[in-house]
Image 1 (cartoon, rainbow, N blue to C red):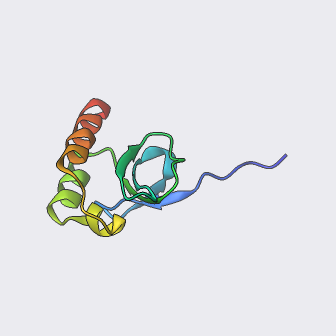
Image 2: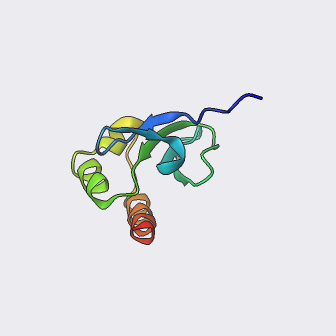
Image 3: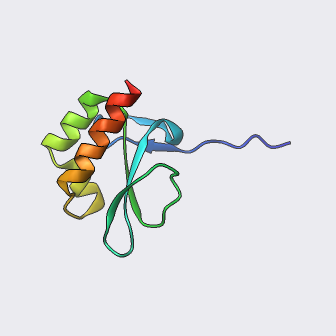
Length: 89
């Protein structure tokens, strides 16, 4: 029996590689829409961030999410991320 290995992804905030399931995924869909992806299965370019306010602050300040997605990120997405991070902590 094979044990399925969970993939690692890099957080755009702290630049640490962590288990994919521990991170929040933000995706730019093929239509150009930016969305938070709770399932991790939406098609498109994804960027991952730790559910940690320090990581989020660094990513927001340095526009790392926008750079990773190669697209401007709406303020509403940042607000949704903050609320998800606060409920996680």
